[in-house]
Image (tube, rainbow, N blue to C red; front, side, top):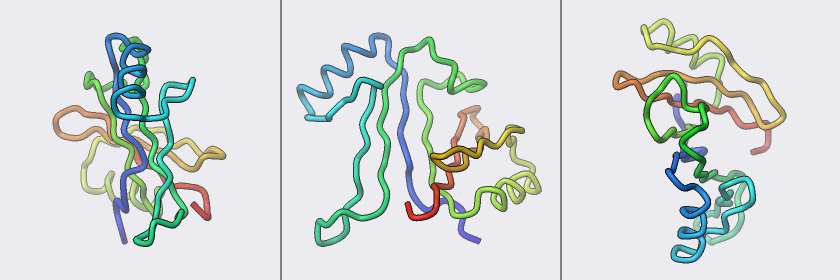
Length: 128
């Protein structure tokens, strides 16, 4: 069974999210959208659009999305079979959070790494 197949997103907190959005937009050319991030479309070796994207997002320090982690970041990893991976991680003694979200954007689950960082696991919808 494959475990992680790629990075689906990088999320981090900022003291002044709007100012940081503006900095990344101005200096690095990241097209920060009103929701606080952007979606980078994947390209193949020829530069053609491929199925998939990676989300990049900056939020305020007040969000509790990363809880119970105290870290200022969270990485979302793409997986092929979320339910199977969650079962394996539990059997291996990992600290897997109880809920699995099944949404129109795919299936999501979370595990806490040994340093207390919340890691998001994402199985994209079919075709992505």
